[in-house]
Length: 438
Image 1 (cartoon, rainbow, N blue to C red):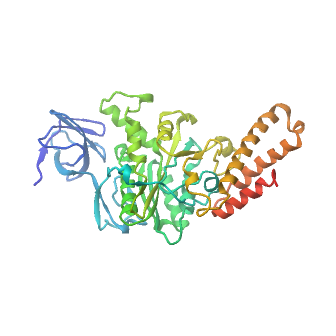
Image 2 (image 1 turned 60 degrees about the horizontal axis):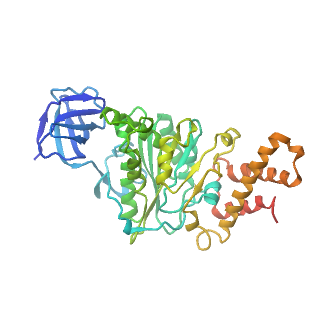
């Protein structure tokens, strides 16, 4: 039996305040019924003995203070799950928006998930091939890893995400799918991704959750949690190798800051809530492998660094939690190099555990290390050339400049639609190193 409560204490932005009902629980789902028959969902985010704070997913516009009815659901927010979700598009709260009807649920799960017992975690092994040489060859993505992409305003990371989704794959005998969470994006961006998935023929292996910039910001906070709940179902119940891509985590953090301010919480660095680190961790740490389970969750969060500042709280805290980072370079982007990955600032800390004999190629590590060392030397010589001029450089230094140009234009850069296998990537790396070494 549900009990309804008439009227609210007050409304502030996407938050409504209700006189605390007896027995209500933290994170409990509630339904608000408006006099015109419209219903909106929310959940409890704060409570004391007098007032309970509820965040409303669809916003609070046109909610009448006195005549709205609040119904408790007696459970946390959950979403229906089924294998038939593949190829479908949902909003940020997990509701279908592609016109193909509701999901016939095989299971329903709380979006907040359950923490993976550290003892039950299995160490990440093997790799996911993205088809992008700079990633596969130099900062290999390992199954069960968290590897963020740090972008800057105006750098086309959406195109990079689209190419990764189109090119990502594992062994043919294994089941593979992608959960894609889009947060705070323009309508044109969402259309770009949907069109890209259809043109590349990968829509049937993607489940897409999208929250647009004109959607309620409160819904943005749910999007990564809903996406990861779907990923956990496919990975640990159905045995899929799952790749999760979340973009843009900066939009998520901005929404978190907005709600925190409305709640009257004391701000921390740059106005973000003090629990930003633990909140990020609750999202990133849902990636991994579990002993006895066939599937895995590999996570690629994409974030925009405000003012290209890598020490900003969002990239800074993300870097603490994750196992490496891929940094996009504005200089390479201006040169027309795509993807503009600055390889010297990027790394994959788990790369050594998923490459080499039995995984990629026996000398993969040596090729990657030699490219890093040689490109670092190239950058030093480029700085010297700015002072002395290229004509004053030695013949060896001239070779390093040629190597750097070739690496950027032939190895890092890939034309649209060009996908390279790991074998092609390593062969190309060896060929370019041949400019310097026998």
